[in-house]
Image (tube, rainbow, N blue to C red; front, side, top):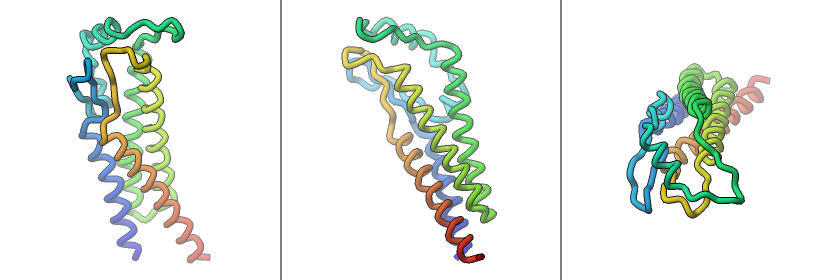
Amino acid sequence: MIEAKRFSLSFLFFCIVICFSFPFLDVKCAGTKTTSFSGFELAKGLEINKTFLDFYNKTKIKNPTKPEREIKESDKIKLRVVMWSAISFAILGGIISFFSRFFLSSLFGFLCTLGLLIFWYNIRQITNYGEEALLEVRFAPAFWIALILSITASLLSLYFSLKRSRVLS
């Protein structure tokens, strides 16, 4: 039974890491998909090339009710750190769960979930210019799958940990 728990949790964490190789963000210009960025590309700090940022800043419609929000270098660094931490926590969660340390793997799963949620929040803050913008940034299905798998893996690890501690006592 422990073997099935170990392998199923390790498999869940492995699937989370695999999701990072698929597109996390889709960029649309005037309703047409122009490009996608995978989780690994975002983590390694792809320079969301200067022309893309310039085009994004030029095409957004200025809204007098919302303050102007430029993408700063500190924003890009923060997003890279958050993505690398989410990837690292998913890898560590998979390794730790393989060795039947379910409480620690649930902790790493929750930290991975937290990293993905912080990434989601920051992207929403950077790119939220209302309905009038020509350039639109959307989260791709791989991001949502990684988030759901991360929540599932952490809750399952916590359940296994609590169930195991009751059996031992």
